[in-house]
Image (cartoon, rainbow, N blue to C red; front, side, top):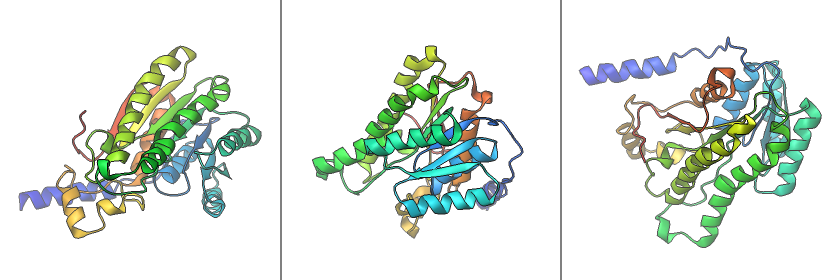
Length: 274
């Protein structure tokens, strides 16, 4: 009974977190958020805009971009959007060019795009699947960072935020290659943060736990999967994408001005250790 009461209190605390944003820490900043038309990416883009940033929305489908931009603009937020498949060089180039044209520069880059096209043991996967996951989850993040340098170096407070996963610390069963790719992003954060520190560019990372999104549905949609997930989460509830957006806003702001090379785990207490 005591455990039940504690669990109910934790769930109540999580669902009663106020969604109103009273901070204005990102006034005058310009941000790009990849894969930002739904889920975690959308919540990050929305929170950055709520705190005053001008945000470029992007994803692979034009209809999704249009819908997301219209929704955020209807709330009075300063956003624009463009189609961007992060694995395509011409799309990435267009993303940066449109951001500069629309907003004049870039201060914040959030690399959020990721794929997981297959479920199964690592050694049962094909080379093509391995390449696809690493091309999008890791290589494209590297290329976005590299191609953003000319704009970020002109910013007075440049920041890069990489979205990894708790799976980078504790691999999820049957999501092995995805988990490996997310571990690689932890290292990419550490390595590039040291290289870019002298340029004043901060590089930090967020490792979300099991967040209730369409992308993570297989981890909680069945009763068995949900029970397994809850057994690993101290707070006994799934996270929300807005709870990731708030951490991204912190990392992009001057409140995190002395932080670089760090990964913030947002997992409700799931164990995170390499």
